[in-house]
Length: 235
Image 1 (tube, rainbow, N blue to C red):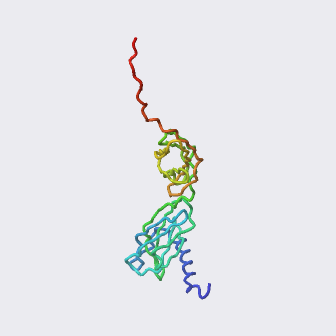
Image 2 (image 1 turned 90 degrees about the vertical axis):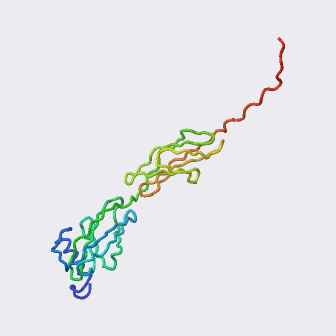
């Protein structure tokens, strides 16, 4: 650092951060007056992935002009944000599938603080894809349809949202259950099916083992020819 410490903004904010964390408990108003900054409002959190959350808020309408904000995560001050950045600030390095709570306190240029904003709580996304579904089998095979069933996939964090059914390399259907029927097949043809799971945050897992099916011939629907050579036989 260069220059007198009392005039160095970075050093001053670090000093203030330490004093706020150590001296003033979160959520306790230290004698807020009309001269203090207005309380931040409309704090919102947008989950960007398994390790990032974007925060935004609005400046309080009453009190002195806000110079910067302190962002608190789970009761600990983690960042000082300039007033002109309050349209958005991203908290990074978070744990996947973990619930966090934030709120924001405003400060003016004389280090007077506002009351805390209302808190906002969200859970980060699941960062791990689900496992593959279990054994895939055919419960019924006909000339014009194939009924499939499989054992469930596992995802201990966000759970399983749905399954995607592939025939060859193309998606043919999806379902939230453990069965699906392909009613667009032809007789006496070979088909290869695979199933993959999608978890609660949209991550796709690996497909399970493939299942090869050969459809049977179409049933004979042609009636027999009428009898010919009908004659009367004398006893």
